Image 1 (tube, helix red, strand yellow):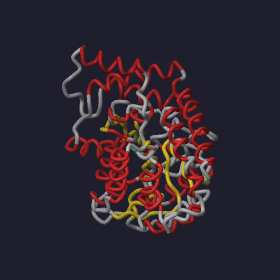
Image 2 (tube, helix red, strand yellow):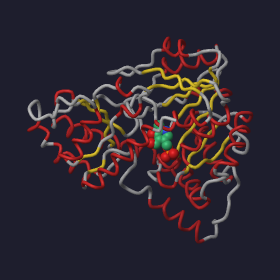
Image 3 (cartoon, helix red, strand yellow):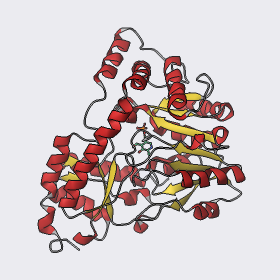
Image 4 (cartoon, protein in one colour):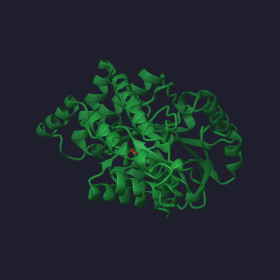
Length: 387
Ligand SMILES: Cc1ncc(COP(=O)(O)O)c(C=O)c1O
């Protein structure tokens, strides 16, 4: 198994702690989720919701998830048979791949590839077939996807909004994927954990496209959406025959995920539908995106446009470093700011463009302190790079 990305994320986080760096590396907010959701978890514990929940998730949360798909996307799902609550999106991805792939099956993924995909595919004994989204616009090349499909292809596994590039696939790209999936009779797994974090364009769930509802497993993460990543509540939505396979894996991997947090997020999702929470979340992150973009640009880094997720990619080519690992390690050691080298998301890291990924899901004070430190980069530009 590759496990490469995970090692790098841990290394960057450990270095950040050792050096007292501002950590814009790993993708998690440095603020808590909505206070009323936190209170609801405490109340749920006090009210005695502390034993095993039903394996597929508590009914109230499954209902809230099905309501969410209906309300925002016009997609009807049976909360009892077509929704599975998992230990974060990570478990949903692993359970889906393990449930649907046999040894030797192939899974076509978009590269750069979120690191858990390669690990899940390897665990299933399947083979990953990456299709690269090319720098600098990271548009989908549907002919490359077509070329990657073979008689052994079992799944297409896509991600939009995309980590780490911030690309949001548009309707034309998604329609091309849908048409191909229908033509080749493939199941598509779509990781939409950043569904509510789009800035310049709308998020289009793949399952809404013609012919897709019954061949799509949609994965999302209440932990991400509610800035409660440590609660590890995610979910997979899809038609019953696929769900039955997922449940069979989930049953013996985690069986279930935390009862009081499910109770609280069921309330949180219901309330969010009433109080405009999702729009406010995107607006808050849009502001942070602007602030971090300004700091990175002021420091002489070339920031790529980002349409969704809470990540920015910035080019350091002018500083002269030959790899993103060198740059990210140096940035921690000398400047005190941690980022992630996106080569961790490539099957062949040497093909990764010279970029670093920065997370802007942070307090403004955190981002501003990173900006203050990044100002020192100006002095190093052109002259002081180690290579
Ligand atoms: C694209 C993508 N999918 C899945 C996950 C994992 O989500 P969770 O924390 O709910 O397991 C992440 C987390 O960073 C992610 O970026």
